[in-house]
Image (cartoon, rainbow, N blue to C red; front, side, top):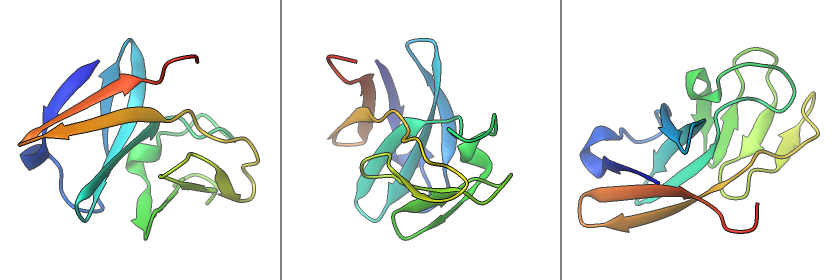
Length: 102
């Protein structure tokens, strides 16, 4: 589990953090915050270096897109989903933790 502040996030600008030894991409879109694995499931590229359009994050390397809400791959060349993380917001604190059962 890792806690960051809501103030440290800029709308539609992903960042990378570490949660339980894994790199995680965190993105704020409007009033919602999402967290997915930071490594593209198609190639070893950091998604936190990619662009966000709506609820999709695009890998900068080959253009694969993923839905930040559920981690699913929504465009080729990626076909495998990303691991998603539980996000809890309380005031200015945002806590990201691994989902149970994974």
